[in-house]
Image (cartoon, one colour):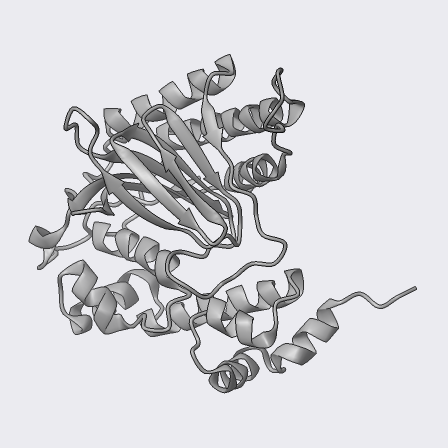
Length: 322
């Protein structure tokens, strides 16, 4: 496994603006993170973990406020509350509960403290092979969550964690009038338990640390969460990171070997290729999901990157009838 060390590889000039402390090279994840994962795993194994599982729409609605991901995302509420809003409704998650967002379901969150004033805190897990991110969130500004501590790693096992969460998001729900637990609910908890056990194993596995700075690791999460926003830019990411666009671009290229705007464009084109292959979204909707306000510009960019138009890519991806 390649564990990404979130400590700084050099002096970070804007470190004082981080809303979480820099990762110390070789240090284990914080006890609060590990304890939260263990508690959720124990509850899932005991069959007592309440898991909210909003259902994916028959066709995703990529345009609108909030996040739009291609992989499932698991939220574990540790304190306070989180109000999730989806195109088809909303859901409040309280301490000791979990929420599993299926792929391609747009969602937005508002957060707040508990009844006794305890500050909001939750854990967010996202696995999209080969990368896993797990972060503790807090409330840096009223009603909005922010990253307090981030762990990230790359490992072949991440693909299995993704598949367990994906299958859990697809397990059938119990009918509202059910008097006994439905097998789908039990299956979902078992799959989530497997994923949590996998995450704990990866986070606690000793490995040779890499050299990725805290700022860059956090930047990758910011990009992932805003990839479908056409206003996403290097300048905006720099404002969110508390440093200049020039500094952020230089650091990212120095660490990754890729320009920041090149990374954003590559991720958008990878997302577009998957949506064209895996969904029946129109070309205009795929453009929106990938952060393009103008479909014509999306088509030109896609053709430059992939060598064919989105329509030709989709036609090539559809298997021919026997």
